[in-house]
Amino acid sequence: MKKLIYIFMIAAIVFTSCKKKTNDEQATPVKQQEVEFAVNTLLPSTDRTAGYNIPLCDEELSADYAIILLDSGDPNDPDTLYADVYYIGDQLYTKALMMSPGTYTVVGFLVMDDLTGDGPSADDMIYKAAPLPGSEFFEFAVNTLNLDFTVTEFVKTKILIDVLCFIPDVYDLFGFFWFEITEITVREMCFFGDLCLKSTDDYIGSLYQESGGGLFIDEPAIFRILGIHNGDTMNSGEFYTNVEWLGVGDPLCIRYADYDYETDNYTFELWVYVNVGGNFDYVHLYTWEWTDNFEDTYDIGDDGIAEFVVGNCNYSDTDFQLPPYMNLPQSATMTLGSQVDLGTLGGYWDMTLSNFYPAGTYDIPENVMLQAWCGDENTTIGSGSHQVDVYSTLDPVALFPTGHNLTDLRLQKLNYLFNYYQTAGIDVFAPANSTEAYDIQHSIWGVIHSGDGLAAYQPAGMTVTALGLSNAALQNGAGYSPLPGGNAGVLFFKDEGNGNYVAQLILVVVDP
Image 1 (cartoon, rainbow, N blue to C red):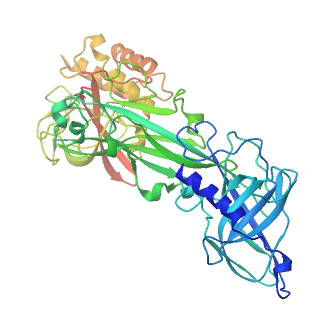
Image 2: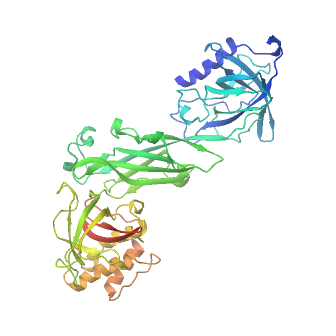
Image 3: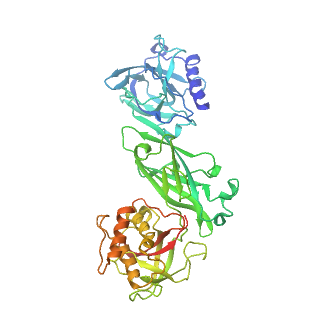
């Protein structure tokens, strides 16, 4: 409330120290010019005011006159101008301000309610005020106080300035003649998350060990958020983060300005603190995108907090159930053996991965021959070594490079397929014969290349078993996430140039 007290202290100074300037006080006639102010009105959020250290105007107040405080050289006695206001249609106007040529600095701007009808007096109430430097909402003001302007002979001067209107409800905001008002809703979004650890040993020495009580499978997530508004980063390009309190006890709350009569597009990137190859760093795991009001796009219940869980260790529903985190290198060297019918391990390819460090710290092994499967029937990749980017079938497609036909929905159905083979008696890691191996490969293509996402694509030689596997995944796999001990895939993208990527994949056991 310190900022609120500061604003009202200015009002007290206006009525106890400041002197109204009249034409009678001018010693010699001066040719005066018209001055107008265009004002943007900032409004507190109507759906979440709790926690705001800002005052709210009484909804029964109205705009009767404006006070403009100008720098006189004495901060305790600023020059004061008064302007009556009136309405025409949907806009609020002031009578023209006549000012002598010269340079001025606006140090205060108030819109008042003349409660007693006797003109400016100490018993009037502040209706709107320009946010003061250092106040809680000053960051939202573009045209701020301590604003310099110059009045020139024969030129009407227009000054832009932002004000804060203290009201509890959204209402039809009026603009005024010298003050063009645009309504801005100041909103606040709060985020809280949990991270499911595959193994607490993987997080020894991390910040999670310092959060109190030791390490647990379910840890309050330490994370940061990069805010982007209409393509520009928020918070001066810095991340919002909860690392100060290690994610324990309180959500991370972010305030943002929503211009009510404009379209505001927001992107919030979620970066979670996790184990990356034996070290601890932030990894981009999810992105929220919305227009204007977060809660018009996402249902987060009545608590006003967007809750998420990375993994499947939660016992109750959450707002955002994110896939388990897989500890993968960003890139690797993929070496494929000669694909002749089937690889020696029973997969479509024999694959070896190398050149990622430190070895033994990721969810995939280095220099160990693996069973691999083809991720794109229509694109050929030869045997030998290839430099590839590494992703998981649990990752959102937005993180992938371009030049492929994968979607989040197809990946969900693919993950369902990886965990459905056992219903057909197939061990996905050790097919009993070439028929089972081709059923695995053909069912993967059946899902990935499905045209409408409901009927399986049928490659040549596809068996009834493989077709049934693909169709089961396509019809039942929407929204699927592997349970602890389940299977997921690792995707390898090779840049073939011109934005085209070749996709190969292997299957691994995950423990979300």
